[in-house]
Amino acid sequence: MLSKTQFFRAENNPSALPQSGAEVLFVGRSNVGKSSVINALCKQKKLAITSKTPGRTRSINVYSAAMKKWLIDLPGYGFAKIAKAQKDLWQAMIEDCIVTRKSKKRVYVIIDAYVGPTELDEAMASWLHEYDISYKIIVNKVDKVPAEISVEDIKLKTVEMFEIDKNDVFPVSAKTKTGFEKLRTDIVSFLKL
Ligand SMILES: Nc1nc2c(ncn2[C@@H]2O[C@H](COP(=O)(O)OP(=O)(O)OP(=O)(O)O)[C@@H](O)[C@H]2O)c(=O)[nH]1
Ligand SMILES: [Mg+2]
Image 1: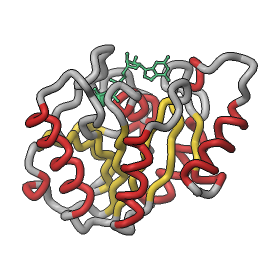
Image 2 (image 1 turned 135 degrees about the vertical axis):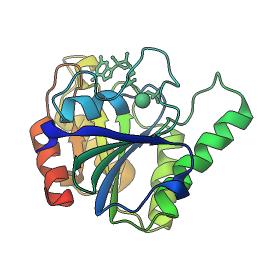
Image 3 (image 1 turned 60 degrees about the vertical axis):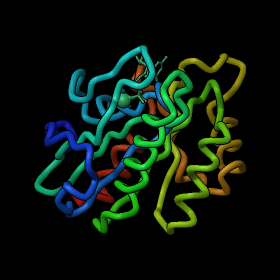
Protein backbone atom coordinates (compact mmCIF):
# COMPACT_ATOMS: atom_id res chain seq x y z
CA MET A 1 0.00 0.00 0.00
CA LEU A 2 1.63 3.26 1.07
CA SER A 3 4.96 1.53 1.69
CA LYS A 4 5.34 1.04 -2.08
CA THR A 5 5.18 4.80 -2.66
CA GLN A 6 7.82 6.17 -5.02
CA PHE A 7 9.06 9.60 -6.00
CA PHE A 8 7.26 10.67 -9.18
CA ARG A 9 8.36 14.21 -10.00
CA ALA A 10 9.21 17.66 -8.71
CA GLU A 11 7.50 20.61 -10.34
CA ASN A 12 7.52 24.38 -9.92
CA ASN A 13 4.63 25.10 -12.18
CA PRO A 14 1.36 23.60 -10.90
CA SER A 15 -0.34 23.79 -14.31
CA ALA A 16 2.40 21.63 -15.82
CA LEU A 17 1.32 18.73 -13.62
CA PRO A 18 -1.04 16.22 -15.20
CA GLN A 19 -4.30 15.39 -13.42
CA SER A 20 -4.17 12.60 -10.89
CA GLY A 21 -6.90 10.08 -10.19
CA ALA A 22 -6.88 11.22 -6.56
CA GLU A 23 -4.37 13.06 -4.44
CA VAL A 24 -3.66 14.11 -0.88
CA LEU A 25 -1.64 17.26 -0.26
CA PHE A 26 0.29 18.19 2.86
CA VAL A 27 0.51 21.84 3.83
CA GLY A 28 1.74 23.61 6.93
CA ARG A 29 4.32 25.97 8.34
CA SER A 30 7.95 25.47 7.39
CA ASN A 31 9.61 22.88 9.61
CA VAL A 32 6.36 21.47 10.98
CA GLY A 33 7.30 18.08 9.56
CA LYS A 34 5.38 17.72 6.28
CA SER A 35 8.15 15.74 4.60
CA SER A 36 8.79 13.68 7.76
CA VAL A 37 5.09 12.78 7.97
CA ILE A 38 5.17 11.52 4.36
CA ASN A 39 8.19 9.34 5.19
CA ALA A 40 6.54 7.97 8.33
CA LEU A 41 3.30 7.27 6.46
CA CYS A 42 5.17 5.34 3.79
CA LYS A 43 7.51 3.66 6.30
CA GLN A 44 10.51 4.97 4.40
CA LYS A 45 13.40 7.05 5.67
CA LYS A 46 14.46 9.05 2.68
CA LEU A 47 11.51 9.24 0.34
CA ALA A 48 11.01 12.95 1.04
CA ILE A 49 14.01 15.07 2.00
CA THR A 50 13.77 16.56 5.49
CA SER A 51 15.92 19.09 7.27
CA LYS A 52 16.40 20.84 10.61
CA THR A 53 16.53 24.10 8.68
CA PRO A 54 13.14 25.52 7.63
CA GLY A 55 12.57 26.05 3.94
CA ARG A 56 13.85 22.66 2.78
CA THR A 57 11.05 21.66 0.39
CA ARG A 58 11.09 24.17 -2.45
CA SER A 59 8.89 22.73 -5.11
CA ILE A 60 5.80 20.58 -5.53
CA ASN A 61 7.08 17.09 -4.85
CA VAL A 62 4.82 14.37 -6.11
CA TYR A 63 4.98 10.81 -4.77
CA SER A 64 3.05 8.03 -6.36
CA ALA A 65 1.41 5.42 -4.13
CA ALA A 66 -0.12 3.67 -7.13
CA MET A 67 -1.03 4.61 -10.70
CA LYS A 68 -2.32 8.22 -10.54
CA LYS A 69 -2.73 8.08 -6.74
CA TRP A 70 -0.53 10.79 -5.32
CA LEU A 71 0.88 12.16 -2.10
CA ILE A 72 2.04 15.75 -2.61
CA ASP A 73 4.64 17.49 -0.46
CA LEU A 74 4.69 21.28 -0.68
CA PRO A 75 6.91 24.12 0.52
CA GLY A 76 5.98 25.45 3.94
CA TYR A 77 4.47 28.83 4.73
CA GLY A 78 5.44 31.32 7.41
CA PHE A 79 9.19 30.99 7.15
CA ALA A 80 10.42 34.37 8.37
CA LYS A 81 13.99 34.32 7.09
CA ILE A 82 13.20 34.39 3.45
CA ALA A 83 12.82 37.15 0.88
CA LYS A 84 9.24 38.35 0.40
CA ALA A 85 9.38 37.67 -3.34
CA GLN A 86 10.29 34.03 -2.72
CA LYS A 87 7.59 33.73 -0.06
CA ASP A 88 4.97 35.10 -2.44
CA LEU A 89 6.14 32.70 -5.12
CA TRP A 90 5.77 29.71 -2.81
CA GLN A 91 2.41 30.90 -1.55
CA ALA A 92 1.16 31.22 -5.14
CA MET A 93 2.55 27.78 -5.93
CA ILE A 94 0.75 26.21 -2.97
CA GLU A 95 -2.53 27.96 -3.76
CA ASP A 96 -2.38 27.20 -7.48
CA CYS A 97 -1.57 23.59 -6.82
CA ILE A 98 -4.63 23.26 -4.61
CA VAL A 99 -7.15 25.37 -6.50
CA THR A 100 -6.45 25.34 -10.23
CA ARG A 101 -6.01 21.59 -10.56
CA LYS A 102 -9.30 19.80 -10.66
CA SER A 103 -8.21 16.35 -9.52
CA LYS A 104 -10.08 14.78 -6.61
CA LYS A 105 -8.10 16.00 -3.66
CA ARG A 106 -7.89 16.29 0.08
CA VAL A 107 -5.59 18.58 2.02
CA TYR A 108 -4.01 17.69 5.34
CA VAL A 109 -3.00 20.81 7.24
CA ILE A 110 -0.14 19.88 9.58
CA ILE A 111 0.25 21.85 12.79
CA ASP A 112 2.89 21.61 15.50
CA ALA A 113 1.60 20.04 18.73
CA TYR A 114 4.07 22.00 20.82
CA VAL A 115 3.56 25.39 19.17
CA GLY A 116 -0.17 24.94 18.61
CA PRO A 117 -2.05 26.39 15.64
CA THR A 118 -0.85 29.78 14.47
CA GLU A 119 -2.71 32.58 12.71
CA LEU A 120 -1.26 31.33 9.45
CA ASP A 121 -2.75 27.88 10.04
CA GLU A 122 -6.14 29.42 10.74
CA ALA A 123 -5.82 31.56 7.62
CA MET A 124 -4.99 28.46 5.58
CA ALA A 125 -7.99 26.60 7.03
CA SER A 126 -10.41 29.42 6.25
CA TRP A 127 -8.96 29.80 2.78
CA LEU A 128 -9.56 26.08 2.14
CA HIS A 129 -13.05 26.42 3.53
CA GLU A 130 -13.74 29.36 1.23
CA TYR A 131 -12.63 27.33 -1.79
CA ASP A 132 -14.66 24.35 -0.64
CA ILE A 133 -11.61 22.09 -0.46
CA SER A 134 -11.95 19.26 2.02
CA TYR A 135 -9.26 19.23 4.66
CA LYS A 136 -8.26 17.51 7.88
CA ILE A 137 -5.71 18.38 10.54
CA ILE A 138 -2.56 16.47 11.45
CA VAL A 139 -1.05 17.47 14.80
CA ASN A 140 2.61 16.46 14.49
CA LYS A 141 5.44 16.37 17.04
CA VAL A 142 3.25 15.12 19.90
CA ASP A 143 6.48 13.67 21.36
CA LYS A 144 7.49 17.26 22.24
CA VAL A 145 4.44 17.90 24.38
CA PRO A 146 5.10 17.68 28.16
CA ALA A 147 3.80 14.51 29.79
CA GLU A 148 1.17 16.36 31.86
CA ILE A 149 -0.68 17.48 28.75
CA SER A 150 -2.69 14.70 27.17
CA VAL A 151 -2.90 14.11 23.46
CA GLU A 152 -6.67 13.96 23.89
CA ASP A 153 -6.64 17.57 25.20
CA ILE A 154 -4.63 18.73 22.21
CA LYS A 155 -7.11 16.98 19.96
CA LEU A 156 -10.09 18.65 21.65
CA LYS A 157 -8.46 22.09 21.43
CA THR A 158 -7.81 21.56 17.75
CA VAL A 159 -11.42 20.49 17.22
CA GLU A 160 -12.64 23.72 18.84
CA MET A 161 -10.15 25.93 17.07
CA PHE A 162 -10.88 24.67 13.56
CA GLU A 163 -14.53 23.74 14.14
CA ILE A 164 -13.75 20.36 12.72
CA ASP A 165 -14.98 16.84 13.49
CA LYS A 166 -12.99 14.96 16.15
CA ASN A 167 -12.36 12.14 13.68
CA ASP A 168 -10.71 14.59 11.31
CA VAL A 169 -7.85 15.39 13.70
CA PHE A 170 -4.83 13.08 13.70
CA PRO A 171 -2.24 13.46 16.45
CA VAL A 172 1.05 11.87 15.35
CA SER A 173 4.77 11.93 15.90
CA ALA A 174 6.90 11.40 12.82
CA LYS A 175 9.81 10.99 15.22
CA THR A 176 8.41 8.17 17.37
CA LYS A 177 6.07 6.97 14.57
CA THR A 178 2.98 7.06 16.79
CA GLY A 179 -0.54 7.70 15.56
CA PHE A 180 0.03 6.68 11.95
CA GLU A 181 -2.29 3.69 11.72
CA LYS A 182 -5.47 5.80 11.71
CA LEU A 183 -3.99 8.37 9.36
CA ARG A 184 -2.82 5.69 6.95
CA THR A 185 -6.29 4.13 6.90
CA ASP A 186 -7.82 7.54 6.22
CA ILE A 187 -5.51 8.24 3.29
CA VAL A 188 -5.73 4.74 1.84
CA SER A 189 -9.51 4.93 1.87
CA PHE A 190 -9.58 8.40 0.29
CA LEU A 191 -7.17 7.37 -2.48
CA LYS A 192 -9.02 4.07 -2.90
CA LEU A 193 -5.77 2.15 -2.79
N1 LIG B 1 10.58 15.99 17.75
C1 LIG B 1 10.08 15.83 16.52
N2 LIG B 1 10.71 16.35 15.46
C2 LIG B 1 10.18 16.17 14.23
C3 LIG B 1 8.96 15.47 14.03
N3 LIG B 1 8.67 15.50 12.71
C4 LIG B 1 9.67 16.17 12.12
N4 LIG B 1 10.58 16.58 13.01
C5 LIG B 1 11.82 17.36 12.74
O1 LIG B 1 11.42 18.65 12.29
C6 LIG B 1 12.35 19.13 11.32
C7 LIG B 1 11.62 19.53 10.05
O2 LIG B 1 11.09 18.38 9.43
P1 LIG B 1 10.66 18.39 7.88
O3 LIG B 1 9.93 17.13 7.65
O4 LIG B 1 11.82 18.70 7.01
O5 LIG B 1 9.65 19.63 7.90
P2 LIG B 1 8.87 20.30 6.66
O6 LIG B 1 7.56 20.75 7.17
O7 LIG B 1 8.87 19.40 5.50
O8 LIG B 1 9.79 21.58 6.39
P3 LIG B 1 9.92 22.48 5.03
O9 LIG B 1 10.09 21.55 3.88
O10 LIG B 1 11.14 23.28 5.28
O11 LIG B 1 8.69 23.30 4.95
C8 LIG B 1 13.38 18.01 11.13
O12 LIG B 1 14.51 18.28 11.93
C9 LIG B 1 12.65 16.77 11.61
O13 LIG B 1 13.51 15.76 12.08
C10 LIG B 1 8.30 14.93 15.19
O14 LIG B 1 7.23 14.29 15.14
N5 LIG B 1 8.91 15.15 16.40
MG1 LIG C 1 9.55 19.62 3.59
